[in-house]
Length: 63
Image 1 (cartoon, rainbow, N blue to C red):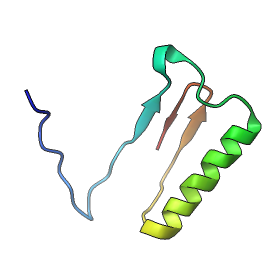
Image 2: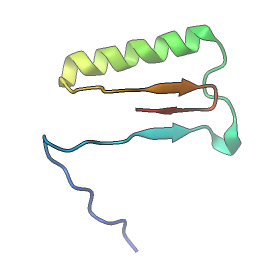
Image 3: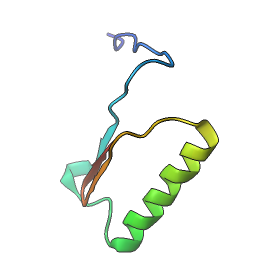
């Protein structure tokens, strides 16, 4: 069965999360955290979205 249609609109809020396989770490050191934040800033400049909050933990992130 296909997943339900995800509402898309300029006025919607989205909760994005990603976790490492088998709860393994996705960020191994401070450099990894900093590089990920650079990626977010690059995407924000390119796509012009609001980022209201984020959490980076060693094995997952939430935006």
